[in-house]
Length: 301
Image: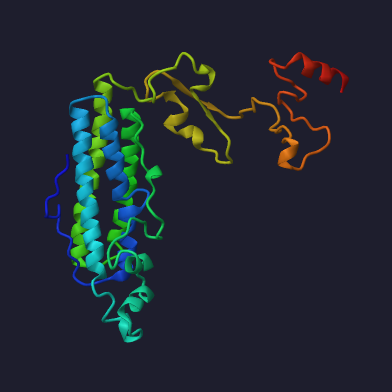
């Protein structure tokens, strides 16, 4: 159950209208790392969480807080658009609405939402539910949450330096602080999962005996750079405490030619006569499950 309180989590009052900045601020609402993304990401993570208790409670606490952040930003956008830019651009363009668009307003803020925020980013690209990560694996999700909060705080910091409005800055100072605590919370939750023995640092904490262990520890040197071997990712004990990392200076390809089989005739793809595709089921190297008919054809072709 959710209950709405008619008060903002933090004040959102600009000193003056600024349509151009309102368009920029849309990134923190509907961008890939905006508040709508983390709101829905954390809500679905909480709803999908199968561990009752502290983890689920914490996730849903943060998720519900993020709903308030969307409300704050939407309110700020509407207030930045109020009358904007009536006293500047309207001197050249008599129609204030047209003047606002000329002055930098996202046209959808005028046409679709009637002078309010829209669920889109700063380039007017609509928000997409595919931005969110809610896998059901808490370690995988918490790693994604750290990244989301880091990117969100980075964008907030950049926007903070794009305005001189004290009211906008005051709200963004609050947002920066909450992004800080959320990064710390998800980092702490990652360590708690390890301490509780629920997950290890590698996701998922399974199939280590099944994977090709020869390739579970090597850094492949595949660029012109010469210093990759100097990092801890190329030598020493891995963060999982199990693997010994190694630097492979001159890795060789392990597969055959990247040659695709010819397409069926009805797809009308361009193909050379007689081409079968190296390594395909009917190609030169064959495949172990070839039918007897195919083997006979290969013999006499």
